[in-house]
Image (cartoon, rainbow, N blue to C red; front, side, top):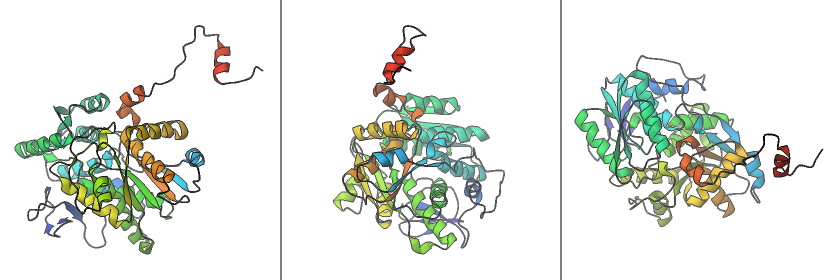
Length: 410
């Protein structure tokens, strides 16, 4: 195993490195020829792939993340005018801490353990912080989570519950990102921030692509819709599918088209895609209920540029969704499919519905929507959606319930 720069191609030793020492480019993990997984990543994948050997070295940190369910969204399919295809919901809310971040953090902290780290630091809008705090607690590592001061209280409560030290920084996520970088250097802690910063963590996300391939029975979806901040989950889907296809001998099929979904109030990658730009420019001031992808990429625009490159290579695209469209998708997921998603997690469905209604995808497509985080992460948005409750004056008043349900008397 080594590291390789995705820009200049330089190969580096498998140390705790965060960027290329020549060009400052993003690093990725490369494995020996014929070996797609190793160490912590192998342990993350054993639950669903009998082809891979199972090893459990002492440094592996796992809470049984991954192998999340994929639901056929039948009721929603039937409600979409003109749609004749198939929609699957890849439900990442069932991961141990309620989001897909567990896949990445498990591998990042396992590698940190292997290299003998003293503690970990994570810049987070909430979900990555909760994941990092939980996995650090599992092995008794000190954990510092740096988050924007406007992070939903539910996420901060979860992080604190795992015993991590929480540091709040005013302003948008990029301020937290930079402060975490500084702390990691000063304290000599491993940085497990879930952008492309930690190459070992990013490598863990390819388990998503493997799972999607197996759960669809090798029938490649036409599109995978992915909520995107900086975008490492895009790489996970892209690379995982590539490797699964290669291992199965189906490489000629090609991977699905990946659609990056961003909030209209913070969509630097979508803007670059439609402008035809080759590089992503940082966003100014994010404004969206989807806090998990409210990342302006200030100072690390290269992350967005790399994601832009991957979605183009997949033949996919990008779409931005308004807060109103996100709330609508949250309602549909909960009331039609029984999946309670936070705003960020529902963005994928919002993006699909928008593109389907605007005839930007084929009406007989096979689609996967990645639902990345649980609704308990941000109850404020649900409270603002005015939940309907009924107060009865008497416990014997069944007639009122009959009227509510529009039932006829027996």
